[in-house]
Amino acid sequence: MRICMAQTRPVTGDIQSNIENHKELILLASSQGADVIIFPELSLTGYEPHLAKELATTPDDPRLKDFQTISDTRKIVIGVGIPLKKDPGISISMIIFQPQQTKHIYSKKYLHPDEEEFFVSGQNTVGLIDNEKKIALAICYELSIPGHSENAFKSGAEIYIASVAKSAVGVERAIQTLSEIAKKYSMMVMMSNCIGKSDNFVSAGKSSIWNKQGSLLAQLDDSNEGILILDTDSREINKKIFQIE
Image (cartoon, rainbow, N blue to C red; front, side, top):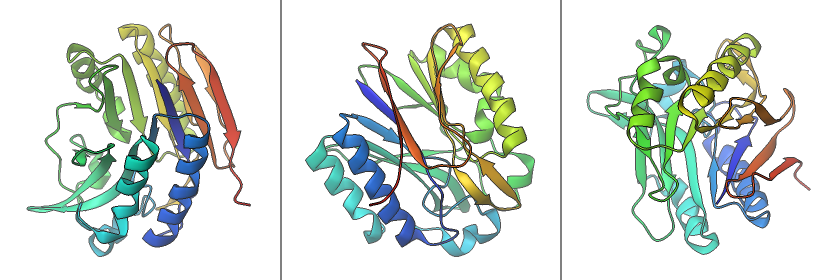
C-alpha cells in the first residue's frame, strides 16, 4: 500500500479554491500510485476557529462530491479536513472518501483548551480507515494525549497518521512526540501539516514519515506544498514539491 501525506497552503475561508487545490494534489498522488491521501487539519477552510461557524457544512455538501468521484475512478482513499455542523455545535472533522463506499467521518475528540469556545468534541475513540493495514487517525492536539495513541495500538493499528495545523514551535514538539509514539508502539507514523497563515500563527509544514523505530525517514520543508508517499511494503519514499502548471 502507498500512503500519501499532502502538505497544502490553504486559502483562508475559500472552500472552493481549496477543493481545486486538493484535486490537483490528489491527481498528482494518484499518478504516483498512491492508495491513500491524507490532508492537514481543516484543510478545506484553513485552520480558522473564529470562522468555523460561518464555514461549517455537512458531509453531503455538493461542493465535495468530486472527491467521491475521484475516489471511485482512481481507487484512492481521500481524507480532507473541514468543520462539520453537529448537534450541539461544530466539530473539527475529517471526511474520508473510499472507493465505492459510504463516506466515513472522523471527528476530533480531544480539543485544545483554546478550541473549546468554537468546537465540540467528537466521540471517536480511534479512527481505523483500512481493514488490512489498520491506519489510525489523529487530528492535531490528539497526538499529545497519550491515551489516543495507546487506543490506536490496542485497536490493532499498524500506521498512525496525524493530520495537523502547527506553527514552527508546535511542529517541532509534534515531531518529537510522534517519533516517541512510533518507537513505543512499533508503528509507522506519518504527519500531514499545512504551510502559511493559520488563525493567529503561521503553519510550518515539515510533513514527515517515521519508521517503527522512531527514526525520521523523510520530511518536506517549511515553505512549499508537496506530497510524501510511503510504500508500506518496500519502505520506498516518494517526495515531490507541488507546483500547479
